[in-house]
Structures are given as C-alpha cells and as structure tokens.
Image (cartoon, rainbow, N blue to C red; front, side, top):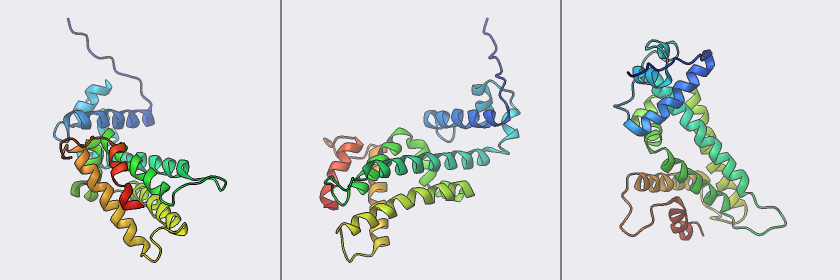
Length: 204
C-alpha cells in the first residue's frame, strides 16, 4: 500500500523558499509547461492550496523564480569579480575581471539552463519585478566595473565604455545560448572554460 506523503511543518517564510527551491528543480526537469502550483504542493508535501498563500498564480511564481535567478547570478558575478582582483604586488592582465565574469556567467547558464532562458527571454523581461531589476542591475554593474578597471589599465583606451560593456554582454550571452542549446560546432568542447579560452584573442 502506498503511503501518503507526510506534510512538513513549514513556518510562513520557510514554505515560500521551499516552494521556490522545489520550483527551480521542477523548471529544470519539466520546463515551463510542466511547472504548476499544485505540483509544487505535492513535491513539498503540503496542501494543494498552501502555495496560493505565497503566489497568486503561476505568473507570480515565475516572477519569484526570475528574481531568485538574477539574485544568484549577481552573487556569482560579484564574487568572481572580487576574486579576480590582482594585488598591487602581483602581475595580471587588464581584462582579468572580464574573463572571470565570462566564466561565472557561462557556468551559471549551464548549471540552470531553463532558469537562464526564463530570465533572459521576452517572457522573463515582461515579468520583471523590483527585485528582478535590482539584481539584474547588480549583475550588469559587475561588467561595467570590470570594463572601467580594464580601461584604467590601458585596455581599449579611447573606446566608449558602455559600447564595450554592451558588446561584451552580447558576446557572452551569445556564447551561453550556443552552450546550453548544444549548438557549438562539432569538436568544440562544450564547456565554459573552453569558451573563455576561445574569447581570449578578443580581449587581448
């Protein structure tokens, strides 16, 4: 006889985060079409109506997922940029910060492709909440900072900074799409490290 799943005693805030975590996993496994509030309730072991206390409908859930995705991405990029900082006594390349951001961005896209597509899709942008905007701006600010630091060290002197920022973002976004959609040419290693190495000549 199949035993019923025991409902977990979540407190208010914990249930919302548990549902988001459950939804992130379901999104990667089943895609947008397979994601439902009732399915999340079953996965979390709570009543069918419990998710509606936190998300009015599926759209509200997607807003929360996109916001959480941008938060994760911004955290990763900030850590990567901080780790790439070269001490004054050491030698480094002007573009080390940009390279570090490229690697972190690509690793994020590969680790959560469905979430990445949601965040950067037309649907994703239509869902943007204040949290989405705040965290996407944090992520974008990392690339702005990396470009300014590179120019301060002599890279692409005289070039308009925002033009460089947008070109680099378009480049890494394009690479991410090729990577997660399996569109890289045959024989090209499908990994962030291989892509980062391939972009070195463009950053020198």
